[in-house]
Amino acid sequence: MTWDVALILGIDGLANGAVYLLAGLGLVLIFSVTRVVFVPFGDIAAFAALTLAAFETNRLPPTIGLVAVLAAIATLTEIGSLIRKGEAAAIPKAVLAWGVLPLVPCALAWAASRAGAPAAVQIAVTVLLVVPIGPLLARIVFQPIADASVLVLLIVSLALHFLLSGLGLLFFGPEGSRTQPLASGTIPLGEGFTVSGQIVLMVASAIVLSGLFFLVFERTVAGKALRATAVNRVGARLVGIRPARTALLAYGSASLLAGLIGVLIAPVTTMYYDSGFIIGLKAFVAAIIGGLVSYPMTAVGALAVGVVESFASFWSGALKDVIVFSLLIPVLMLRSFLSVHSEEEEDEVEQ
View 1: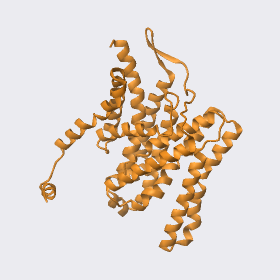
View 2 (view 1 turned 60 degrees about the vertical axis):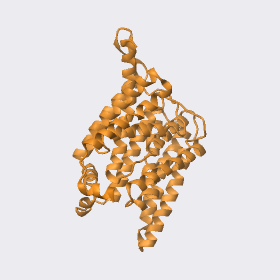
View 3 (view 1 turned 120 degrees about the vertical axis):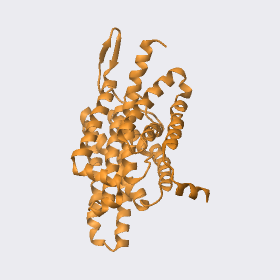
View 4 (view 1 turned 90 degrees about the horizontal axis):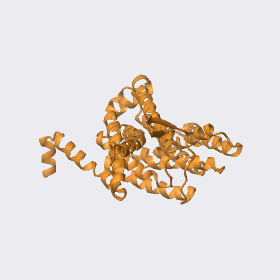
């Protein structure tokens, strides 16, 4: 390996790390607020990439049908819940929230596909179209079992991923797709060495979105409500914050990040209906490095995962994923060694 090769691999690793950074932030956000390890995060990113590819080939995005089906199920679920609670008067509001609003992006996507909208409009509509997927899934699947244990929520999340993979195969088919680059040209970094504009865009997008993420958490009421719910759900409820609403906000924000990830990654890799799973797993490794609570450490972990993956693909393309996932072993051992175990916990384990 020469220095030129190492520099190329390092740049590629930073690009991969930028994607895992955004995905890791979404996973940590959902887990800190709801205690759910949202495995389908990567599926939403894959659906966004395939949606944009459908736009570019002048096809009606199948995501419209997926969102419409989820909206219908969520509406029926909410209506059934209101009837059981004796709150039938709130049904019109529920129909508007769960049955009508999610269909607005569907209508925009249909209009954009028919009118041959420009690329910028296609990207915006693509992201808007996948944003309702997270909240709809949360209402259908996770909200009814919000008080379950973390293990139960994880099992349900895994089952939901396999269900979405099947729906992805049904709606999008087995063919892979790749979109046009969002940024053309190259940027020279030295004598005989250049970086593509797409990679620069990916890294810059991760930096900008991370900064906006920080500002939202620090300066907005919604961000402070998310932080309060993540720190203490009971305390947040006592001061008037409704955990169910903050959970939906977390899922919506994560879906927004997933949509942006799909748009950014689609030009550099061929995306299939199930390609999001491996993206979510590698982002989960980064989130574990951050303890599923620390955003800065998650960012560091994401960059580390991206760089390790890039160099591992140079040494052994067949074992690169094994090497990346092996990062979990020392991290978990270190966290277990540094964590404080009380005597009461040890007695419970012995019993």
